[in-house]
Amino acid sequence: MELTQATVGDLLAELGPGDGYMYLPGGLDPRRLTDLIAGRYGVPRTLVLDGFTDPTVDESRGAALLFPFADRAVTIRAWAYGDQWVGAGTARDGEGIERPVLVVAHREVPEPLAVVAEEGVDWMERLLRITGWTQPARRPDVDWAETESRLGTALPGDYKRMVETFGVGAFDGYLDLHQEPWTGLREDGLLGWAGTEDKDLYCWRTDGDDPDRWPVVVRSFDDKDVLFDCRTAEFVCRVLIDPVHPFTMARWFDTHWFMTYEESD
Image 1 (tube, rainbow, N blue to C red):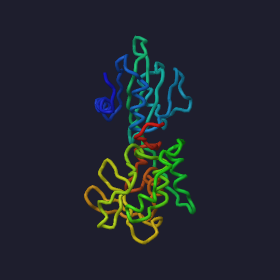
Image 2: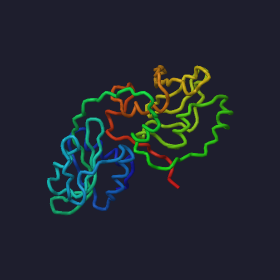
Image 3: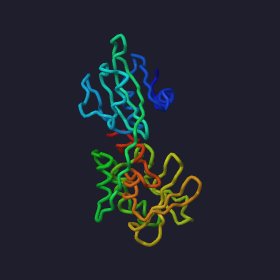
Image 4: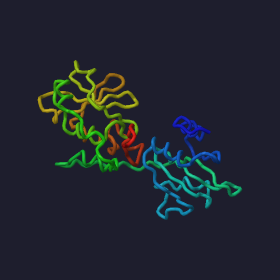
């Protein structure tokens, strides 16, 4: 079995939305399986390592993933995705042979917590904490003077910090960060700075001479505009962690990350 994201998708579809598990061929690399799922769902939590179960594991941390294996789980890592737990690793089968496994279980989605508005927040610093980003800046030498000259406008400072810090990739593997603004909606007074798999386009409404005060506008896939009176980094933070935000990802993931599309040097 050749492991790809498409293969993982097919296996998860085979397991379905309810509780289920499968033993996979013994020659399959369980680390490769874990890496592929992490590329889709973010950093996992470890439930079992070398046969020892984390004593803090309970229903809120994916304990349902361990039920099919009793005391036969060797290494199991877990991801929360909406109303489902996804787990991968290795466990011993009925004959005592350690094999790669993929398992899913129902998850009770926790009640949303309010996101409290705060004064003086550095939203880029907050974004680094939310995503657990610890890598060096990926594009520290962007020539913004050239880009802004070519575009004929200055750009928001937090957006420039975002590009310099994260580089090419997507938040939660879903929200693609443009490396320079897209000008296709300029006649509507919009500059696009990100997009999603659902074909929503995240823009600024370029009103006024101070780009750091430009509000965010979401041009949805059906050409409707939704205005948000906040800046770029705050908008991304709220999309990631605010469960009542119209474009939230907080109900789907309990950890957040930036998926880098380029290899580290």
